[in-house]
Length: 263
Image 1: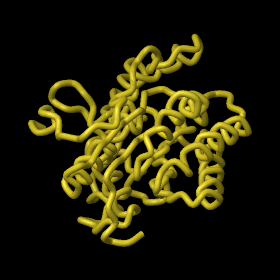
Image 2: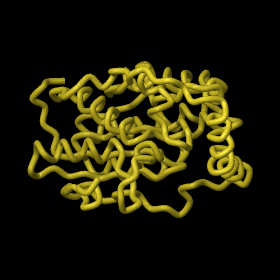
Image 3: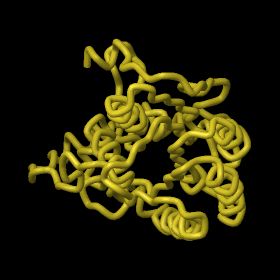
């Protein structure tokens, strides 16, 4: 991509990662990498427009059926598609179906926009994630193949060590902190061929790990507040996104929200 690339519209498609959890603003809403990227693009283009169709908890079948057609109809310069990880993290998953739904979404979105961006999502280091790592890597192979076939860009958030650092992850251990989202925004920005402001891959300074007592307290709090409710939703077939509308459903001019200006 050329460094003088110009983008006048951006549509984000996906789940909680693209919705912006857990980059919390003072008013209780979430910002996230897509909003940060939109703000930077808007600063370059006075007529810039932005939509964010992402909804937390969505599976790739739902993203392909509910979000991709809407995004395709918008005809944006840039579309980002991040999905499939919620499927891969489920106890049972048919990766062939995941591939099929990803193909469906990419085949619809790629010809509808000037630039389609896919991602290899970041993965937190730790024993729980190790169980699902083979599925994640299978998903990323699918993404690479689809990108090559359809001329899409791929942002590799999985390889750099910094985004696996536990300090980049919120207490729910599923979503990035504000710093993590800021780095993702920079990674996408650079992938779009825009002038870099920093090396987003720079690792955090060394720190002493918390003691055993602190770790056990954190583990218990995590299990009570996040893990058990997540298991409950899986067992009952519910999702955290049930009934929730898209974050920003229309392709409209972007202005920095008041809550973000105060953060």
